[in-house]
Length: 68
Image (cartoon, rainbow, N blue to C red; front, top):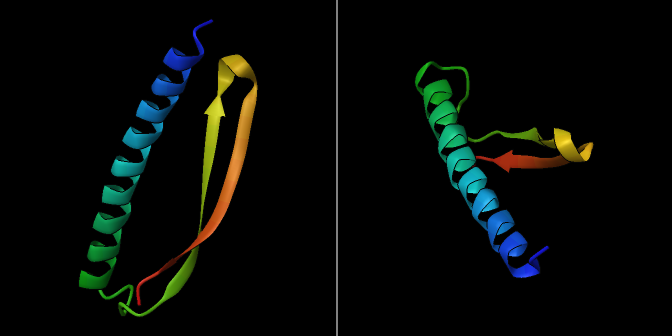
């Protein structure tokens, strides 16, 4: 196993997840505000699950999204 290749591959995956997740959340928030479902000053819980079936890995991350 090449530790450097593994590290770079994980970082690339996490960067893709981070960028695409942020865009998806931003788009969903903008739509919810436009549709009147959110006022634009809320905070709400968020969670994400990292799952890698071949490794039997499933980790949940909890956090909060604040609009102000």
